Length: 107
Image 1 (cartoon, rainbow, N blue to C red):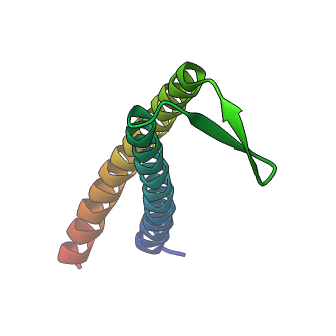
Image 2 (cartoon, rainbow, N blue to C red):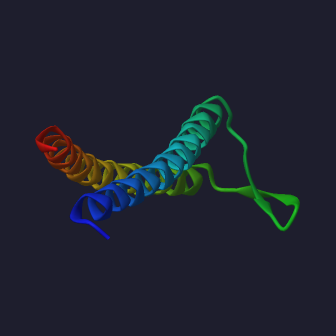
């Protein structure tokens, strides 16, 4: 296999990884929106409930607020982590594309 073909395969692998990261980031963003929605609803009420094994159980509002804030923070960290990975892969892809284009122009 030529060096050019190897670079093309590397580029395809990077693009597949980018697609997977995009899906992950979207899932985390959905989770974040759900948490934010739950936080907003919790602000509107005095009574709070937690779903445990398909039943709703009364819960302490303050502890739920704290739990949601912690969940949101974890999800935001995951989003940032995925975005960093995406940026690294995008840079690698850009470099590979440039190398492939230069090699093609020489031919």
